Image: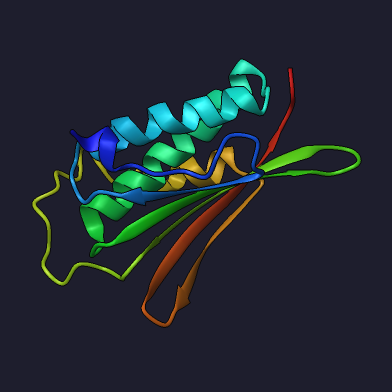
Length: 140
């Protein structure tokens, strides 16, 4: 079972780290786990939906286009005037073989991430790539 392989920091932490199984069905399990984290952070439904969509897009991107292993880090920062959630997916770099992904069904994920986030980017580092996004969020 995929969800048994997912690990996160204990509830109440400001940062949660998940190992991503390299399987298409992993995205659904990750969304369920992150939904629980966001509920604990008391975000509005709209803010949580946006964060979950960004998580889905970045996780799917890593599973489809990158080499394993990959990890997801979700963290919250409560500033004086607003709160933000940061989503980071780190993998070991692009897969060398071209995948058989239909461009009509895929390819808009990073555009969605860019639209929903306050800031986003890619950090290439020794041993891999980190795609990240920061979303301004409101609490319920």
